[in-house]
Amino acid sequence: MQEFFGFLNISWQTVVMLTIGGILIYLAIARNVEPVLLLPIGIGIILTNIPLSGLTDEHGLFGLLKKAGIETELFPLLIFIGVGAMIDFGSLLARPYTVLLGAAAQFGIFGTFILVYLLGDGWLRLLPFSLKQAASIGVIGSADGPTSIYVSSILAPELLPPIAVAAYSYMALVPVIQPPIMKFLTTQEERRLRMPIKEEKVSQRMKILFPIVTIIVVSLIVPKATPLIGCLMFGNLLRESGVVARLSATAQNELINIVTILLGLTVGGMMIAGQFLKPQTIIVFIMGIVAFALDTAAGVVFGKIMCVLSGRKINPLIGAAGISAFPMSARVVQKVGLEADPYNHLLMHAAGANTAGQIASVTAGGALLALLL
Image (cartoon, rainbow, N blue to C red; front, side, top):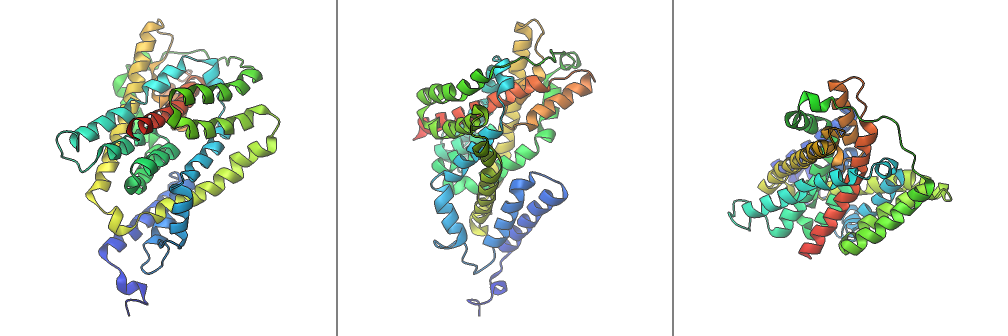
């Protein structure tokens, strides 16, 4: 009878996973927490944990999607084309110094990587993680879901489900995670520092050259980042070229929407009870929040240094936007700045650091691949 009726095969692990899937769907619909991805992930979790469904078999729906989109790294790369088409790098080009803030905010990736490795196989052996698994966990700090998925699918595919869920969940929680750290590391006087509101003009020629030059420079420095940076900048070139409006619109809408659905279902479909409900999963979520916190702190601290060096012309809050959670982090900086001074508009400056963080996180992911492959 157990071979025919799914309910006869339900275990406590199955019940837990079905509950987790339901919680993600609730958060997506009732709380509007990253619904574009959490909704398909939640449904994927429920479907894959229905006993005897066969969805995870080699020729089942999730088995095929995993093989076609995750093992080939196709899904995250296609999403990057759409993300690139949606990003305006004008704020970064108008304020080149924000590149440094984007780079500084990647400290959480490498700091968490080193921490997990030292606590794992590297030294104390307190955590059950290898060198490649430690690197994959550190990439959660990129605050970039596609980069986290891309790197972990190569280095530690067995940890991909919890890493993907942690990355997207913490991206949605940026408005909760960042403000306390920002306020702790800055004074009221620093948060009140005003920066020019006037937007500097950036020529269309520069916007067109930027993605091309970025591909060449980043790829020559970190060749392993070429697929990521190439797809991101190709999408941006579609946007800025002005001659392929239909392709740009497709990348921003149909392409990214279709791939997001498939990616979300596939990630959820990989969260099988017996493989997901392990102590490792809890540790991944804990270290993920550590990575986010270190990223934010490093960005703000570097912002304070730039504030001093610039003669107090740079508000250190914008350093927090150096993480890759675009555009949420820039909006958080704007909100915290307005709380300190209702006339303190930091959004355009923070957007420069935020888009710089997008490029820096991709480069950091490629650097880890170069070091460990």
